[in-house]
Length: 80
Image 1 (cartoon, rainbow, N blue to C red):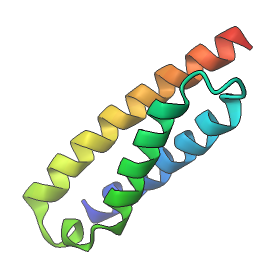
Image 2 (image 1 turned 90 degrees about the horizontal axis):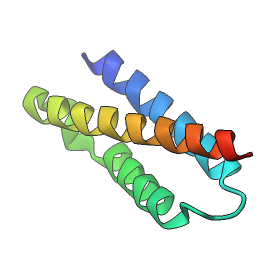
Image 3 (image 1 turned 180 degrees about the vertical axis):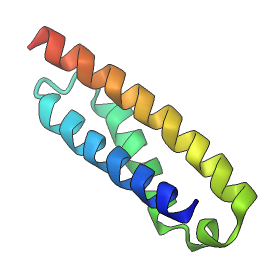
């Protein structure tokens, strides 16, 4: 489960980077900023690695973030 958590963190970070790159007109800058702050906070949380129930909740949050980032990226690429 720890490996899947790390993979999810990495893929979410990659999507976040791509969304920032494609948001040239800063249409979603505030939301992207909040998602980035949340992602950074989760990445710094050492306690997540030691607790399976907390890790599961954080993974659910990351999955929701990833879905939102994919939606943002899709919208940005559609309008490009």
